[in-house]
Length: 87
Image 1 (cartoon, rainbow, N blue to C red):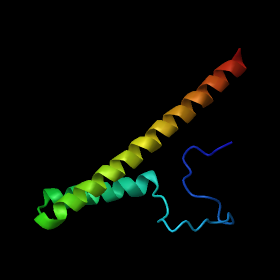
Image 2 (cartoon, rainbow, N blue to C red):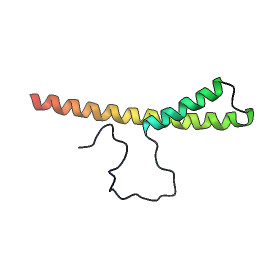
Image 3 (tube, helix red, strand yellow):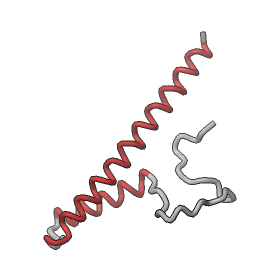
């Protein structure tokens, strides 16, 4: 059974080197989004970096939305299987 809230593989699991950075957890993505928002609101971002920061924020939002959708599907499946077991 998959651990719904676990984002990290077991410590002894083999790690594939795909050349891409490791996937962020939901919490890490949210923290990065909060940092971007703080910089924008605090006017700490140079206008030349604004588009780059907004592009990154959009990527992080997509990542978070995908993780939320996946969790919703998994929770729904678990609830349905529990309800079927009660019948």
